[in-house]
Length: 543
Image (cartoon, rainbow, N blue to C red; front, side):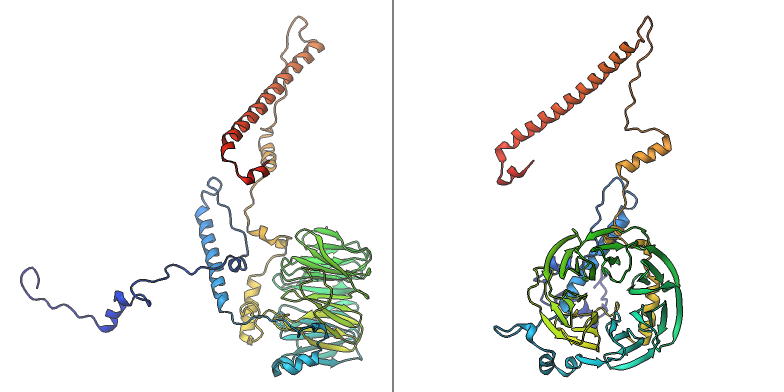
């Protein structure tokens, strides 16, 4: 009934709408949520996904851009939190090999592992007997699905090792020093005796780059589309494969270059030299960023782990040393009877070393000095190439008798990012990823030792501000003007009187500085007396 006394029929709400606005059914647990707010996350889980330091927002220099910086910080924190929450949904975990009581894991053979694992995992261990064209260099694609083999006597083969399907097999009738996949499995580079060649996955020659001659080793930087090469003539060269141009050529002035690896964290190239030093290079700098003395003899092999914190080196002095790249100091060292000729890190931190005709895999080599290997495998010497397959517990070994796929439990990352590198991608997904990667290509000028500096704000130092004021005004505001005595008559301008007046002024200025320092000490002593009554056990460490 309304105010006039008439009966008004109210519209009825249907069941769906009534349930939608029913306060009783707003929460699953009842009227009130017993656990309000977001779920708590452990600090270590959040730190796992942090990619940059938090920006320090001050009031004065960032008045205009403070709001935009604050929004970017909120987005960054949201991304980190969501990634940490979704980490709980990842079902796969990496597991390592454990022996029985009193059993050493390095005595377990590949046949023993293949007998107890499932059929799919057992098929990952196989041997390719290729004695005619060895020893072989090996390289896996970024998604870990495709395998590239290059024999020293000219044999090249590209394989989908999941299905054991051969994509191409050719013989270039020339010495092959190294092979590398490029940004996708449709193209690969081959360092032949004279020049650098580019082939497609069908074995058709696409390019012959004569500017890159006598290449011995190659590394591909996937986020920069750069192919780094080092040659027997002592040159370090970079090729931009997206445009087909040489962007940098540096004479290292250290003789023959046959030891090279890249840091996956910051794309810095590490070179080993015959005088026992290791140098770090960037394409935009003509001098080494860092130079380290690592061995008494020549450096034989290098490897940097996935995090970019640890570097493993081996030399002719038969020592294998682990270095911390944050401090450039050695962490551990061990003596190997024959010395390691090749080194390689896995995604989980395992270290593989080729010692004579034996492949040794070490666990936690950066924590303690390795005493006994985690796993071992004997192959036909010499061992010419080692590489762990991404996202698989497999180590590829190229040797004089062909190629061996070795099962190493716990070597691969258990969960892969399908948007980053997907082993099961279709042709359409591969083409879309290639276009996206070209649009997001990182310029070579951004390759630095510390990539976190790229997200920080560059503020002018005191010295830079002083130099700018000198250029603009022509004077230094911080510099005191020298005392010039005024002219006096009747002998007041004699040399002795002028020096006397300058000395008096200098003594007055010095006396004022002493008074200021004494006043500062007195204020500090007064503050210490006030806080004497509330001293704690930690106050004795104060300076």
